Length: 157
Image 1 (tube, rainbow, N blue to C red):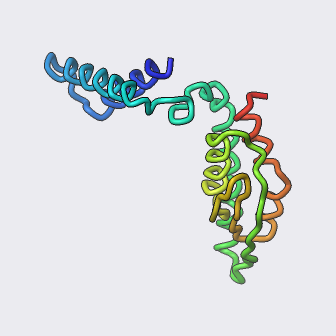
Image 2: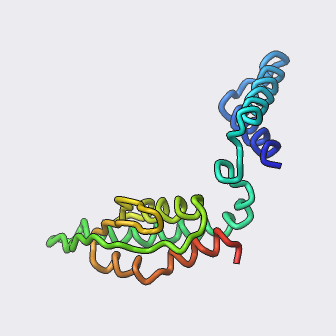
């Protein structure tokens, strides 16, 4: 299953980037994709952590939620930047991640960093050091809503 999805993903990626569909380029693309899939199988580098295709159905609900959170945070940061007194309260906080897999921890850390006004500065096991532009952004992160949402994404609950 993993190798079939890698092959499909690579084929689609090649078709989008190539833009040329001739009698010579299409078979060359197919051979290239098959070669990469065969090499990755031989090397043993394709696994569920490196290619988490099993998370795709859950990503369909997680990504819109994350985009909404990014938009809300971007609006908050925009208001701060446009405010004449620039009311920032830079804050460093440590938060604990409840995720059980490396993929879950990476998704959580990256989701924090993608959200404007917060950056995951360090990941040490299940503990993150996060810089937030404002104290309220740090408090929002500390309340655990994003952690719970990523936990649902990871576990499928």
